[in-house]
Length: 261
Image (cartoon, rainbow, N blue to C red; front, side, top):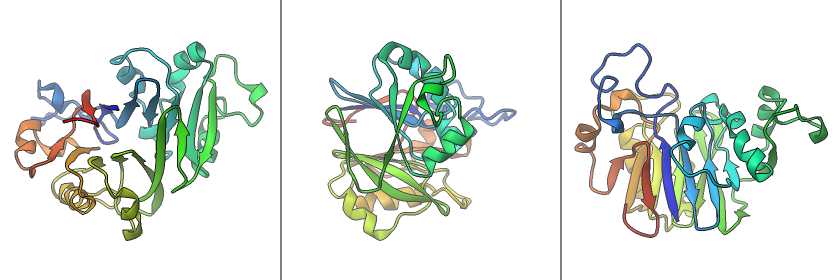
């Protein structure tokens, strides 16, 4: 199984508009971070995790093939604003299945009613064909040859989803996770997890040390940190501050989950 990190930045992206810091002015492409999204692929199945406002640009970097499903972590703009941009896939492959928990699907219908009409026959002409499905925490779903276990994490007080797929787990926007959730992460070898910055606590996101503690508790051998700000510093210098087995992910990074990173 292959995972491509399509975006590794926080909600503002990097470079940040109007910022002249060394990270935002860097020529190293690893310092340029689009909003978080990932593509999970086997030989026969492709799943997209989130579809934020940069998804069109992100998907231009990968082959144009069927997307079998979109897993939605939560309904914040930086994770769902690009759903409309999936319309070329909908036209070419007769629609896309979107998986979200109850509440998230309702908010999607509120903000994108033309994409998710109450009556499918009333779909706005030209709108993407997005078939939304309710999913529940700890109830696995199977798409093609990929089985997904939805996990519960908290973005401040907002309950959102993480996802486990085999020995791989993807968690973004987390501030905390209940102790009981770790049982569902036993055996995870490769972890992608959010780490906003090194210092200055945030009310709804964990910091680098928080993410490292979670990774150590899970026992992940390989960890990539995502949803990071320009305050993390230049990519190489920031990586030098991390322990063995933990690195900052970067846009376009490809991970072979059955092999080495």
